[in-house]
Image (cartoon, rainbow, N blue to C red; front, side, top):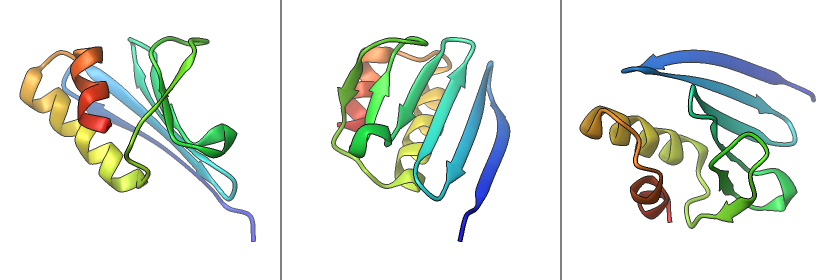
Length: 88
């Protein structure tokens, strides 16, 4: 069965775009273009639109999204290094 879920949410000054389908999922944070996805067979984060991917330790979609939301709410701005640490 194929399915596709797309959602857009506002978190502080950022917008999150979620795309979930039967093969993969992705969370994109704009306007700074951070993307977390599970393409290529493992969960990783990109810090720019076509940036290289960095492996992260978490693999659960809901847990990762909650960490991102809490990071933004607690810090008001995204610290890429700190966020990567929280996700690893």
